[in-house]
Each structure stands twice: as C-alpha cells, then as structure tokens.
Length: 164
Image 1 (cartoon, rainbow, N blue to C red):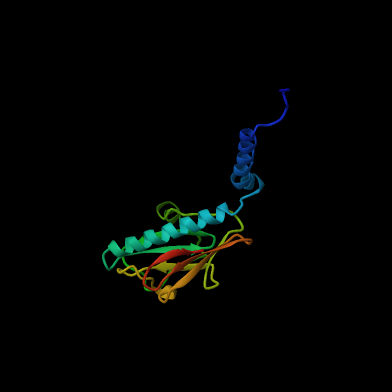
Image 2 (image 1 turned 120 degrees about the horizontal axis):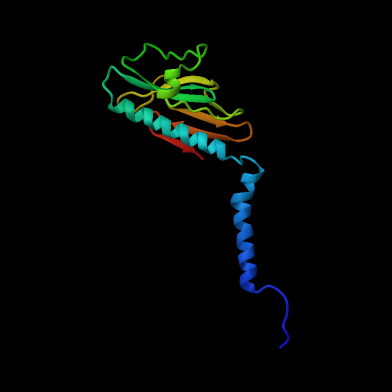
C-alpha cells in the first residue's frame, strides 16, 4: 500500500481540542479583561459583606463593624461604640488607618458599586446578621464596569448572595 500524507484521526481530534481550550480560556484574556475584573470585584465585595455580617454577629452589643463604600473603593471598619448615624465622610477621603486596617479595595478606573442609585453608602448588620438602615427590607448592590453589571442581593433576614 503506498504511503499517504496527512493527519491521523487522533492528531485531528487533539488539534481541535487544543483550539477549543485556547478559544475558551486563553484568547479572551489576550483580547481584554473579558469580564474577569467585574467577577473579581463582585466576589471580593460578597466576601467582605459576609465578613462584616459575621463580625457583627460575634461582637458585643456596643461595638459595630460596617462596610464603607465610596465607589469604586470599599473597606470595613470597626467602632468601639456604634455611631448614631452612618458617618460616611467622603470629603475627607480614606484615612491611612482605614486604608490599612480596613483592607481598602481599589478596583481599576471605570468600575462602580451602587446601592439604590447611590455610589457612597455604609452597610451594617445587627447581632442576628440582619441588615440595618437602607437595606433593612433587603437591597441589591450593583457592580458595573460600564459594559457588564453584576448584582449582589442582601435579603431582609441576612442571606447575602449573587444574582445570576
């Protein structure tokens, strides 16, 4: 039988498989952020909300920890005594103590975090893990980069989850 030139079936399947993997994972990263940053910021915000909720559930009644958002930056802080109101002072900016102890997260330009059309807000929880203030009846946080929007829901009883 004369020798023929060409690919075997196994080689063809392997090439198609490798091209599929590249198309799904590698190429979107080369072409841009591909939605990865919005997922990362959403996941960090979700984790930080759950941390603040858990800390509030385990602190003495006179102390409180809250999540401070001055979009797109956010951090958490703890008070020895709870302030009478949400004391978000965006004019003074982020203090050095808040930047280090509150583990300030600063997403890249173009990202925004909002709650009820406000980019500056404070979120707190009671000792039972339920949200207080403007989120007492439940609320939705929006994380956006201008093209995509991701949502986090805080239920009135304290369940915090991503909305697909």
